[in-house]
Image 1 (cartoon, rainbow, N blue to C red):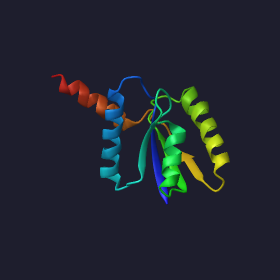
Image 2: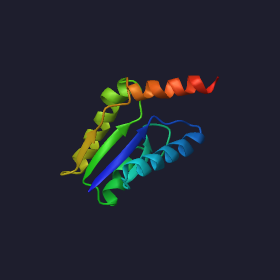
Image 3: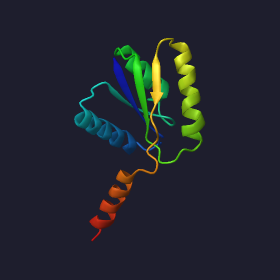
Length: 120
């Protein structure tokens, strides 16, 4: 069974939880996927490992990790892959793939354009 983990950086602000839950629901609605868990890399108990464990408990044996990061900095290139490696070592047979970070995507430019136009 497939599972999806949407991974945000995290913040001490409570508002981020509402935003990530809302975004997760929108992804469910658009994709039809139901086994999706929102998690944070930092500043939350709802972290990467907790998210993976939740998905495993729900029956996932293949998990896609979607990093909500614009840049491929140290979190994307080192921290997340290292943590995923440790988690996979605990769960032989578990397949975890990390998708590309958001990065330089034309759809983000479209969103920025929409925000600019909303100020007119």
